[in-house]
Image (cartoon, rainbow, N blue to C red):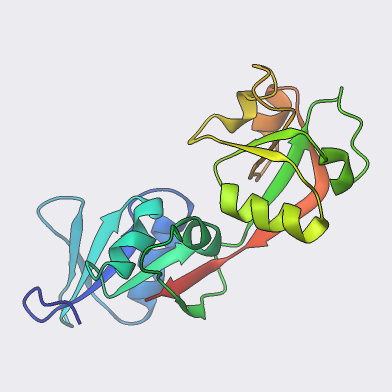
Length: 192
């Protein structure tokens, strides 16, 4: 347990897809959450628990380094957080926050399956997840790591294809890309 006043600290995403779902999960467990003086720290009134609201990609580090005792995070983010240092481990899947990473290509790329990516450059914000997928498919490709606006990479000739989170596909379409049938699925977990 965290040494901060003997309170359990749980890291949750401050904004984005999992933020509201994480707070709902805590409230559904009977915890009365009260917003603190700022958006960073929420307190639980009826138990010695604090919720630290941070960027999702910081959660694995905060948990592995002992800043927080637990974290609620997507497994794609957890895997990306494994950087050779201390590792946060999955305690249990939560059954929500499922997302799909998809390979997307411009119409000029004749895509006929994962082998079509052989020798190409693929842009993504999830290089470790993509590398695991490519290795499993036996595909050698260069990965270009980006921290946002991945969908512009083919238009800028930075990469031939992308791997990114896709919900409606509207952003892909607006950038002249189409999602392939290839899916890399992830879900939300509690980690420690």
